[in-house]
Amino acid sequence: MIAACYEFVGDVPSGCVEDWKTTLAAGLPHFSTSWARCWGRDTFISFKGGLVIPGLYDVAKDVILMFATSLRHGLLPNLLDGGRNSRYNCRDATWFFIKAIKDYTEFTNDFSILKEKVKIRALSDDKEENEQKKKNGESKILTLAEVIQEIFQVKCSPSFFKT
Image (tube, rainbow, N blue to C red):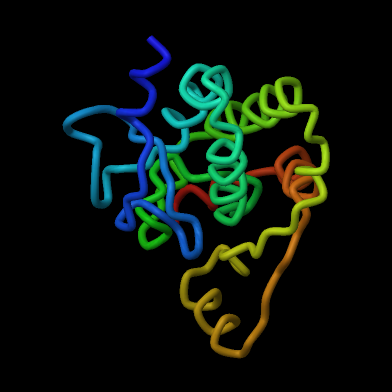
């Protein structure tokens, strides 16, 4: 059964964000490549059985950090789409993400992951303002612990979901 997890893990550039290459497919064959490759909710629901229990700790760590870069207004995307057109249309992806971090640290005893720094891609909730800030050289770097803190602290207003 553990060998089956290798069918869902792979280096698929169309599903990855920046330097991270390995992702976990949401399901085969329909969710194996391109924009449909990497879904937050599915990735983290299957995280423990697909990555942690089989001992794919390096992949598990990379998946956590890759998704952390996509933090926006306290949310992680349900659909990552290689960071191009991410969809922030579910709140529970963040809770499964938190659970994945808990599972990872319990299995590996690697609590140093909480000190890992990630470059947050969303500098603003407004797409045009975000692009302008990036052009101006602005950046936002958080530790994974700070990402978790932001998830718990940010309150989503109804207007956020209309954009």
